[in-house]
Amino acid sequence: QIAETQWIWRDGAFIPWADATIHVLSHSVQFGSSAFEGVRAYSTPRGPAIFRLREHLTRLLMSCKIYRMDVPYTIDELVAASRELIVRNGVESCYLRPMVVRGYGTAGMVPTGAPIEVYLPCWPWGTYLGAGALENGVDACISSWHRVEPNTIPAMAKIAGNYLSGQLIKMEALANGYAEGIALSPSGMVSEGSGQNVFLVSGGTIVTTPLDGTILGGITRDTIMTLAREAGIPVRESHIPREMLYMADEVFFTGTAAEITPVRSIDKITIGAGKPGEVSTLMQKQYLDIVHGRVDDTHGWLTYCRD
Ligand code: PMP
Image (cartoon, rainbow, N blue to C red; front, side):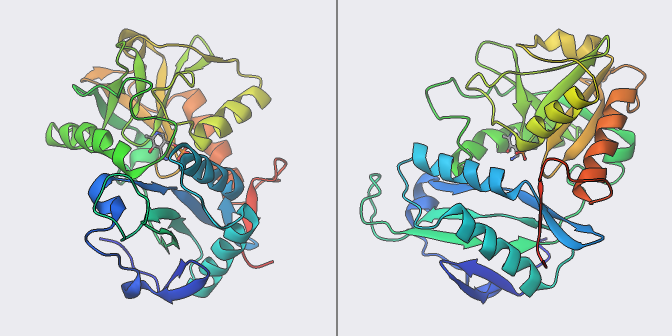
């Protein structure tokens, strides 16, 4: 259930939520060609603040670039629209889903004639991986579905069609009683969750999959790598064999929706002590302190909406 808000920004105007509709023959509906972002705004002592909005919008424009979609707005314009949207909708915290859609105009696969439409919806959205996920950790599995081969459907583009893979991973995991699935790459190494990047902690070092063409370059991933290095924790990007997850002291997911979610078991094998470990807990605390404006925003990661 989506907690509807009043307004959606569409191509420069604020329109009522119910009016943000598209035709069934829109190119994006037929062919999955809609680039999008998932961004969170948090309640802070200075009102709602959007976390790393510019980085998300940059990734959106890069997803569009890969698919030869020309977006007629600058990042500054989209930042201004996002801030105004949150103020107009009167929300203190929310999830924002900027979308660049190829609209109605052709039934063919080549999108010539289909207009580019840009939408910014936002709505309140709670914990993504279920109640207690952040505090207790979640049970995950290795998915029987692999990620796509590099140079097939680009994993670094956040585009609707990619999420056919994510849906298979997630639906299988849920059907088998797990909160989330971890997909392997075509070469059998750890890739990512259906909507999260994967980290492990072993002997005090943090390890995560490199940007190898099988994962999305997560903005939370980058945030955690930055925060960990600043905290003096060694961070390594390297290919992770599946069994290294089972052997790890800690495993956690990162993502805008999932934030920092500890993983307490994988395939019913207990990870570490079976509860959130020291490093996961520290990273989660630092992350939540920053997004909620409880500590100094030394990186300029917050975009305040009301000032
Ligand atoms: N991988 C996939 C496939 C995702 O959909 C997401 C969520 N956008 C992530 C990783 C995490 O990215 P981010 O931290 O930027 O939300």
